[in-house]
Image (cartoon, rainbow, N blue to C red; front, side, top):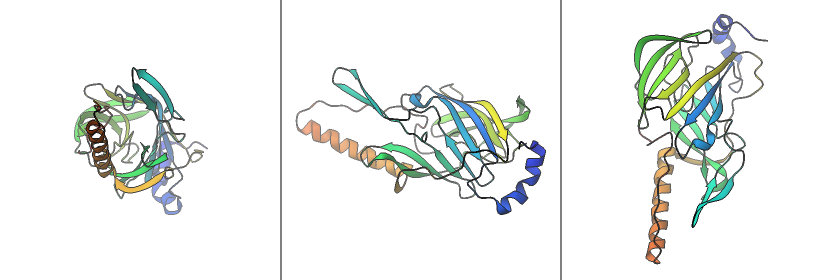
Length: 250
């Protein structure tokens, strides 16, 4: 049963009293486009399932399985996949994220690390723009080394959006970086009591650490490995792969 938006919003306070946090009341489909080496394989459709307490961002177009290939002389590359779509679970009130990431050093099934949510210092602007039937307002803010423009709707007062974006007084229906490198384009929005998917914790090895701590440990391990090879006479270098997040600081 599809309910009118006004009816859904009116029922929010009542339905949440008995609502299982795994049950979504809405689903947004985005087209994710990141011209970055670390995320290009995930470009395509992505889904945000949400209710008032939690949301789950799923990169549906990410490869389902790992694949390896030679990308040049003595260069062997692996493209990592995940049959869940590298989901990001957002706990709204706790301002906490659970992210699924690749971590071949620790687990072939990928790892779960935590992160913070809704920490962007947004600037709200007066411009309006419509996405389908929804009136949206413009906001700008910096997140993890990139400057973003986002369009959010007060028609759905839930503070979440694509990827790790959130913290606005309404649902983000579209966002992009001002340099055009990262885009989350609006495709569709469904408000319904019968969405078949569920909001759940991603599967993987729980690292019991933050993304920042994991990245620091991985960098230290990688540097030690490189120094070990160099000590044995090998000429090796490491080139960081650009991702949506240029750093782990806001």
